[in-house]
Structure formats: C-alpha cells, structure tokens
Image 1 (cartoon, rainbow, N blue to C red):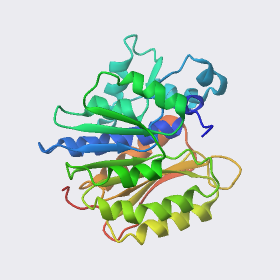
Image 2: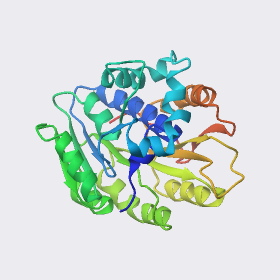
Image 3: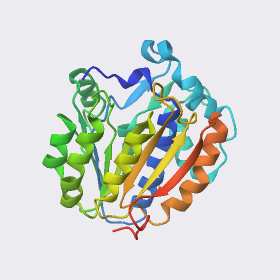
Length: 283
C-alpha cells in the first residue's frame, strides 16, 4: 500500500502496456453494444511528468519521452499517440501522462462505463476528485482482489478487466493465480489483461502455466528491455491476455518490435500462445 506510480509514470512498461490497452479498447468499441472496464489498480488517473516524483526517477526519459522524440507513425500506435496529444496542449512538449483510468475514459462511448478501484487512500482520493462529476466512472477505495468478486460479472456482459498490481508483495504471482480462475468463471465473455514484471524467468514461466490452466484462449505479450539474465533488475514486462480480441496476436507481432526499436530495448519481444488458441472472435 506504499506504492506510488508517480515515480514510474511514462516509463517503458507504461508505454507498452498502455499502447496495448488502446488496441484492446479499440476492439471493444467496434461493436455498438455497451462494455464495462474494471481497472483493479487504478492509481490517480494522470501524472505530472514535471512533478517531484517523476523527476526524481526520470523513468519517462527512457519511456514515453523517448518514444515521441522518434518515429511514431506506426498505425498500431495511432490511438495511443492521439491520447497523449489530446492531453497535452503544448504538444510535442509532454507534461501530463495518462494512467489507465484516463486512457479508458477517453475511449468510452456514452453507453460504456469504467469501474476504477484503488487501495491507497491518497491515490483513491485523487482519482475520485478527477472523476468527481463523471457519471460514467465509479471510483472505489478497495482491495483489488475483493473488487474482482464484488464487480464481476458486470451487467453489460462485455468488457475488460485490467489487473495491474505493483508487485510490492513477494507472493503477488500466487495471489493472481489464486484469484483468476473464479474471476474468469464469473466473467467468461470478458477480456482479462494482467500485467507482470519480468525479473527472474522461472516465476514468469510458472505464471504462464497457471494462465494456461484456465482453459481459455490466452496469449502473453512480453517486452524485454534487457535480456532476462539479472533477477535483481526489471528486465522487462509482460501482459497476459485471456480471451484476447480477434487477431490481436497478429497486431502485437507488428507493434512490439516497433516499440523495442523506438525505446532502444535490447532483449527482444515475444507473443506467446499460452491458452491453446490465442484468439477467439469477440463476444
């Protein structure tokens, strides 16, 4: 509960995660029927890259700032870049960085809604203030794993569950593996996107195996800033996607190498089928 994402806002992991998030939301928007997004670790919604926390670590310099300084013409990046531009009137000067709730909110249609959950009291307070007059957004100060039981399934029967833990707890992979079977069973038509860090290889491989045991179509998009040969550093990140949208794997095969080149990553990228059949037609 001490984690503050402001120290890491706009880093390489945010860029990859949020670029993929916009792709998933684009697929959901392709059908007129409403959808719901449950964001279980929502943070404060947007971050000031000139603020004390972001400046202290400087992680955005090797993330979003490096990205926009280069070639951002790839069509798979268009929605993500548009969001950054819309949030920053001084574009291409980038001051504000959107967290996942702000990205989701920007892509909601009038018939859609967001349920944002944040456990940290101060962050939850800031998030409530950001969306204080927004009838399409509900903010709850609560534990993420409790929220999976409380808010699934949504009435819309379509949507996304974004699970983005800070991995402060050493047993976070175990907690995810324990919670996911019931959550997926409750919302079998939903897309689940679960972020995870890549330090040591063995826990990641074990987590992929747990996802495979869910018995649902699933893939893992993995981005290696460095080769995974040092378990003491953040070598990369992954996003496990259960019930991925139709042909998302093909889009990610194009997108991830573009991001690796733009961000100067040296460890490569992977799109791994971990659920038998990587994609299925959207509900």
